[in-house]
Image (cartoon, rainbow, N blue to C red):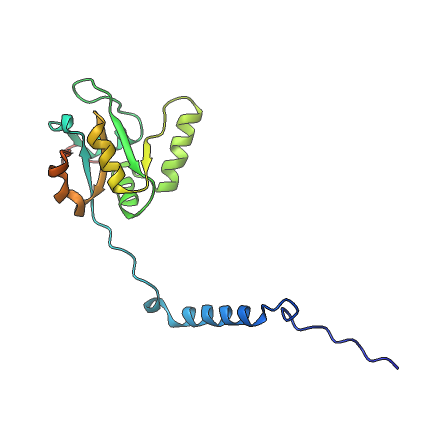
Length: 171
């Protein structure tokens, strides 16, 4: 009579059984610990609309700012083209889009893909870092973008202006 052949334990043949068990135990411990074990989300400060020094006299309503970043308003009051620039991601980006465009980052991307595909515009230039966005606005006439409120102390030194937002015409 032959003995039945024993099957190897899961993962033992490949030498990763202990590692998988350790990862599962760590994941279970984190899940059981609750939200206090998770890192706190970074605080998001209100986004501030900024522009090239040539835009110093501009004043827009919240609705007009949304129109600028949705490609519906394309010129400054003096006729020069508006060059909107945005951050690619982050809390400031999400807050700005929600506050002025009424969209989530995913809705904003989808909106611009449709605009580009239909030939009605080109997506605003995007930046990963606020410092890169500031440098672009500083050297590009007609450029307008946004940064976290915490960065406004550095703007006058760079020659960048804060674009005023009027309270009338809010959505």
